[in-house]
Image 1: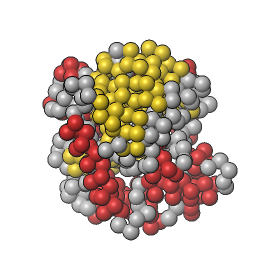
Image 2: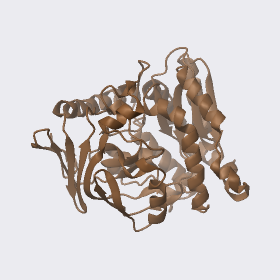
Image 3: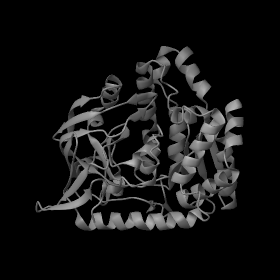
Length: 418
């Protein structure tokens, strides 16, 4: 309860209300009569309440929230039977998939303590994640396939804030993190919905140029990096607001600075070095280096967290192959803030990045109607994981390689060259 009181005292009610409006109208594009399913940590209840209010004002059908609680989660790891870590609430995820079949919108609020599981048995964490990923797959397929409009926004909690700003007191740390979230989410503008419309137009211009060029591969070069990422056959670039299969235009990630597409799972070669740490399930994985051959990461190193990183990548066959490549300029607001958020939603928007694991079917022409075998034939990867890690900086160049082998400058020193 103390954490919630601290958060409420430190966070601007006006900006929180604007974030809720942006989540409903820009993030989700929620339609009149459409149901909404929300997941959130208990500490994010103030934002959940405001989102629920604006959802009903927008004409929502029924708004349903599932809360998670850090203390309850930790109780499982400390007192749960060993067998329980190979189980997941299948019935819950089956229900979610059914809700998405019925056109329910999906909103996730990110705001858990990033180090919540830092002191727990990594083997149990890995098993629990694997079980949850398998159970969640039917629902996740609806999201990754962009069947419905969905969105992710964030809300700070005290432990997260103290991790990001360790030298500040609790109130001040929460306020600083809240302000950083508001700035990155563009809700510190007088009219954030209009600000998002302008931002989406800029992203779409980049997306449209990349689609026009129809590169066969991207070549990343810089300190510790010489990586060629082949692109899936019939790939499409996406970014910013997009139309889901249900016809509703939404912004899946708030904030977002990226344009992204699907790599070819068998056509990635070379070596690459991370430019920022990766925070994953309570572990900070630092100085990642990988060597890829024929699409697969055949050498994986990290100065910190290497064993856990390898264990995650061994989740399944697709875990060591790429499911996404994204371009983000070094001048993005999140990059320029100089803040390591320990939260992928933010940190991935500070730099160009690649993702290990599951691809986005929406980024393959006609992918929404393809079978899993057809997606794989086009080069799309399949996995229970999807983990972004950052490879961009102001020292990274990116060339596009055309089908005829011509090289076109895409990024120079971390900025758009076109």
